[in-house]
Amino acid sequence: MSEDIHRRLSDLDEYNQLKSHESELGDQDEANATDSTTTALVTETSSPNLKIKIGSKQSPPQPFHVVETAHQEDNAFTNFRIKLNKFLNDFFHAFDIPLPDGKQIQLRERDEVCLSDSPSSFITLY
Amino acid sequence: MVDWRQHTDYLRCSPQFFGAPRFDCVFIKMTEEKVILGRLLFLFECSVGDHRLPLALVHPFDAPTGTRLQKDKDLNLFRVRARPRGQAQFFSINSIIRGALLVQDTHFDYLVVDTIDTDMFLRVKAMHLDAGHLVRI
Image (cartoon, rainbow over all chains, first blue to last red; front, side):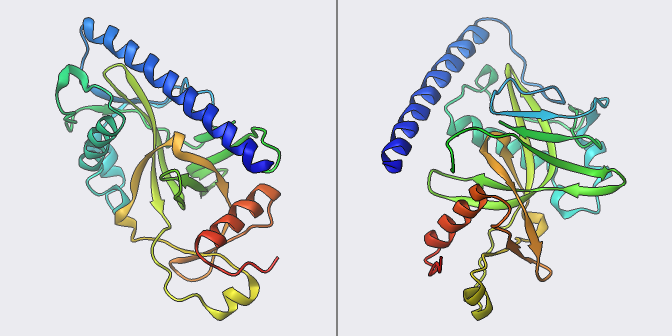
């Protein structure tokens, strides 16, 4: 019985995912019709996603090199910008999300990031 | 997994949480079948064009643990091992399933506490079964 319920829920999840993906693509098509920018900007605002919210006190945006310098003794942050750049390109390809202007994402050192690395940062799962 | 309802889980990721660092551990869904554990290192939201992606830098705890220790078998413990910190990965926070309580055993090894709640108990049991462990329950 539980397996049957699980299967039905999985089907529903898959359907919802497909619907949201379709509407996302629709939004993207509309956005492509206007002028879109490729600048990557990390902000601390809440995600519109209903399942998970990311929260934090606001802090001013910081360029990548400031973030990397602040964590220069932490191996996890080595090549932060380069690794994020690769992740974003892979992510967009994996989910068939059209890249802005059809170009590979190219983060620059001076691109600003606004990080949730403040004392109150947390994720809320619903 | 217990009652098929959604629950709220507050996960902290902060170098200064009431005066001390706090970086919570989480379950991360890699694929439909594969779930790993890891520690949150950094949370942020990234905007590219019109897309806003909430992301996390995570230290994955999915390094091979080798032959299972006899005491782990006897006590039904689930052991995970941290990869080198330099292999931290980015994940969409939508891949995060829930928080997890881990206890450090050795420098790189952690034991998963499965008695925190029933959901955790069932998830760790499923991981035992996936890993081919004999579950004595």
